[in-house]
Image (cartoon, rainbow, N blue to C red; front, side):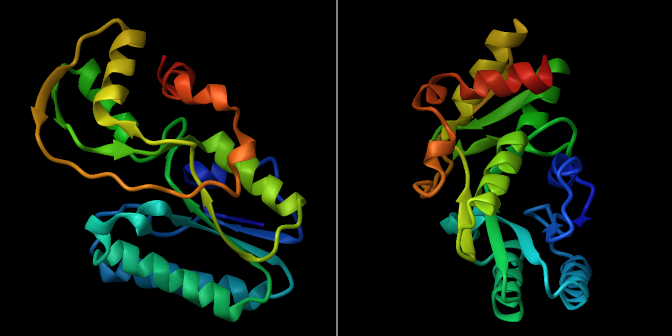
Length: 223
């Protein structure tokens, strides 16, 4: 059973299973402040749990929980609350805290979509020198979650992210190189970064991917 038709939900459409609920619906905008949107997701989660109590409940949360600059944001507090509901009201669950998933389509304001659009339209990209982001192919999200399920990992919370973070400048430069275009850039001496523990899933990647992962994503989804 798949709940949700966004970037992550679509990635699982060929892997629907009768014994698993893939819950990929709800609030995805980290800047959301509308309480109705948060309540709508909570209501849907409770309903799906009640109607599918015998199934493994897979929930897609966020690695933004580790971002100290967002500790008090409504979005992070909401995601933590959803994790608590799932972990206390289901006997069989897997919570995947996902970093910045990249795929075809998705929210126009996602980082990679924003950079691509800005370069194409010759718009100024404001680059925070100290900012870093963890990018992960949505196909890797799918494969890692399926691996966790098939390997019968114990119920719990798993970080689903890449092996390292990338600076915004590095991401923009990769777009420039592969598109053969120069971005209009404005640098600002600010930004933030946070580490994500990926020891549980690190064997899902090869060490060599660290050197070309961003370029691979751009070729795959933005060429």
